[in-house]
Image (cartoon, rainbow, N blue to C red):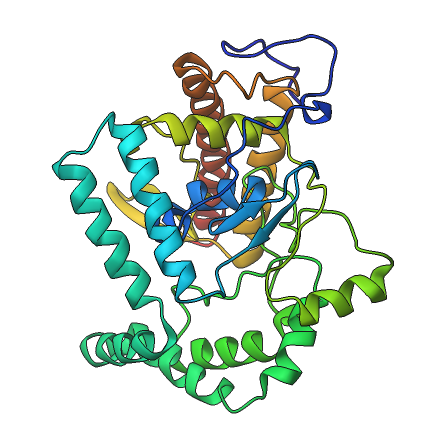
Length: 336
């Protein structure tokens, strides 16, 4: 275990940061950038604080409603928000802002169902090993009525890791995708950067468990009421919204399904099982969250604080990788 460390950018006033009565540090509306971010860590942080394409409900604390299903309004509104955020981060309208705007439009169009299907077919044609399982599973699961799939999905209280592993063959990837699409609960739970299961809804239950599930089945906006947001997540969220350059953002990503090690004088990739990868990320996440402590001044994030978060997480991840590497090398020597 690790004791709490004092980090730049933090406050310690004896008050839980999530109990504050002023929510102005959160935007009242978010755009679509979370869907197009190339960094999983950044996307996951947004989903734990205030998901993309959401509107905060005034006077209801950390409560928000998704407008993503309200097309064509959703595309227009999210694009407007994206441009406003880009202008704010860049300090004015410039060539980069214009370029990012057209990228947002391109990604928004590609995300539409009727165009996504054509895009997937094109990908499958150029890279069959990688995309054929995805396209064929989408076709097969398309025959399962949404009336059946949606209740099953909405009753699940955690998000699921629905993507097959890189080493899975075409048949196994295809089978997993179909199984996960029809029965999401058969997929392993998604793990947050802090080593916990990722809730499907960050807010409180609406009524009892049965009432909550029924409302979510018929509610297209995934209403979230009174979300309990970790202060460090809000700190990261606010800092990333301030940082104009991607290299300045806090982008913690999980350990992949392999590690590299020098074997017989050559660098090699050593695969990790699904359970080994899962436990490695749980170990790192929980250790990092303990080390970083609780009281963060999320309304005033600083470069020093952002750097400290990244350094502590990276150091713990490096140590975990070394632990796994040593264990794997010992195992390989025994089997020689």
